[in-house]
Image 1 (spheres, helix red, strand yellow):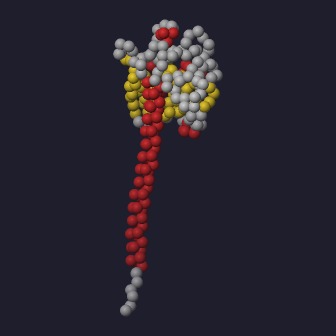
Image 2 (cartoon, rainbow, N blue to C red):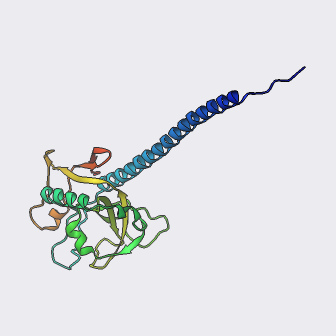
Image 3 (cartoon, rainbow, N blue to C red):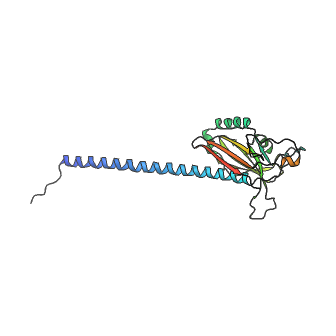
Length: 237
């Protein structure tokens, strides 16, 4: 019996159909791969946001009525809570956001201890406070209270904490970048009459006045990609 083979036309048609199927398969695989990458990026972004908010909430909730000494050695202590006035806060946030550039993604280690002057930080920080509950698992000779400050640098929300409570001009601080693409950050404070205040301004310079704390703090964080996030944090005690 004579065996019949494929004609050239049949072979070309088969190759054409195979090429179409491979192209369709590649498109599906490519789309799935892109979707997976986007999902991983979104997940990392949400984790970064949760970490930043958790840090802010813990610092505020554990706020302590402990003023700190002026780094310049002045006679007036810095209050337990010091917030930048609302007008200055808005200007600082816009300035920090507009100065962002592509080089910010190539910054150094986000949690590396560095030694910087605390003088400028006291005037530029959007929020500074004394918090308690500083974990000390290895029993280092230091207090459980910690002085922390937040500010915006190149559209990033950055947290600083001092190695000591009563810092001097050159006391070492640890810098941690919490989240980027920050458009603005603002705060409101609930006073003893349960009224919200846009600014936390203390009248007087007595030690007791400097210890005054709000009942709660409202944090409003606006991100370029995720929009507006609002948290209300009750101050313990």
